[in-house]
Image (cartoon, rainbow, N blue to C red; front, side):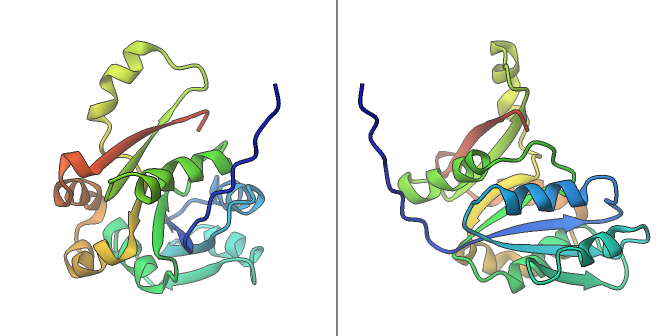
Length: 189
């Protein structure tokens, strides 16, 4: 059977990573995004880290955009800062401690926005071999750090996001209708 190559046209995309004391995983996470070949700008917000995170980020000078908070302001503020600096039409939020991130994971997060009717996409990390019992609890996993949105839909929410800390994920979940929220599985992440 002959394979058909499909060309997908993507708008400009920014991947935003909020990091606070993530020295154990931040290098792996950033390297995996860059090595994935996914066409995107990478914006990392160092949210007042007191460990080696800032030093590790220096290794990626010229390849990523780094925003530094002098003190820890919380995840909501870090995401808001990244959003302000992102140049993409679509923004993907990724946790700073991901292992196994690949091109197809990032693509899975944006396709429902581009080719579907989604306004919000939530990515659920699952083992490579998933069981049906795990899929059945997936709707309760709304606090995932892997998400995608159109930047324009988030800009009016920036001020509210800044003081929410980790509550930013629940807040964002409440701001988009369920029928406009897509849930995608990210196996092997």
